[in-house]
Length: 229
Image (cartoon, rainbow, N blue to C red; front, top):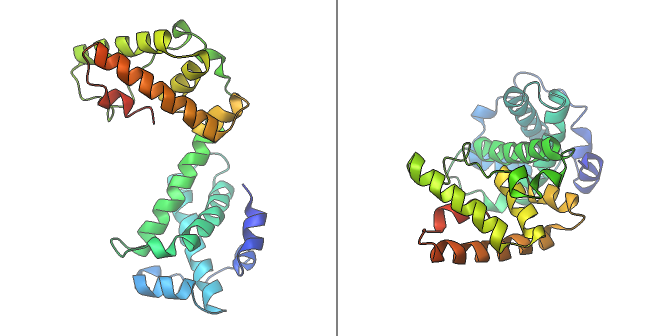
């Protein structure tokens, strides 16, 4: 995950892994939101101390939420290191709408989820998506996508299956079915020996084709197409 490169790019981070903070140091609840930002932008040694405290908070939070997944504490430490890089680069985007630590933990959690998804699909083949019989679109775990009743939902899903089969190219079918299954775009790109931009273009063109198909069939396309982005 590039932790070594990350350390070399950011002064002060290279010493974090070996730091051990006492109980009085890790009292982040007593650090104001303004203090976090100013300390992370400040001179040494204050900046390194703030980085160490923040990494400790992220590791403990991730270790608790990601317990027993892909390496446990080692995984949490890797994610925390990557998260620190993103947090430092995004300090200007912190607007005091939440606690700084909540904002930072959100960034770390998103990175962790993305990495867990990548690991989950890294050894799975796209062959399962080569035809409609091999993969039936199911939004059972995506209730945010469709608000219809069960009967309406079944009709929409049947229509979506037909549209994917009839209107999309083979590559578009693979990309859309994998995306609907929850695959990250970067994993789809790797499995197709392609790149993110090319996959995004495939999905964009597929969405346009499906939108036309749903409108012709008399269905509002927005809810379904929201899942294919």
